[in-house]
Length: 301
Image (cartoon, helix red, strand yellow):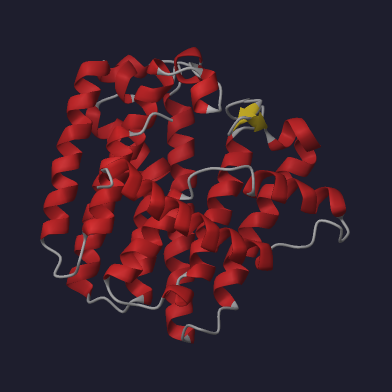
């Protein structure tokens, strides 16, 4: 019998293969000018990674009964926005990291200017992927674009969270639980939340179901962030594929730095129970979503 981790790994691998195929069709050819830019985006997009956000979106869409192919362009778009955010996050002006997924970061491999442009290009390609998806109605495409733009931007999206995170550097002990939660609901949680919401929108879920999916995904996003913070202090660079201990070095406001490792684990468990409680209120099969929650709770990288 398959374990929870094996089942979730299978879901992630299936989603990764599907989304990678769609990404191949949506990204410019690396031999097409400007080749340096096109190689830079592929370096980052195809550097590895679990494809967790697309997998979550596909799992939600399929739970609500929609066809897999209707989900793939939006799933690829979400991965492109995520990849762009990592490129910019690694820049010297931000986290100044030289390693991502065990490989040199985009700016190390291609230079800072090209890395900035690569992030910019991936963001534009993401919205084009949704806008051009004729498997969806114009009304659905407009809603997806609006949802993704909000999740990636400000005042309650990823970019806002990144700024709040930067503002909090240097004095993590002064940050309240509410302030820390707001940072990570924006910085990490918004893109996880929108992944689930987009899957439900494409599947034409009702508004009450959408609210429950969003509630579930908000708790899942916080689980993801807390475990990520814990891994930064408990695992090695070799295991993580990125530089371990960077959060402490930069004096970032993380769950372990503010509350300690033990309490951070307790907080992750609290969000785990609330995520599962929300799943229990959905009237569709949620076993795949439950597997993904378990996977995030138990991940080691």
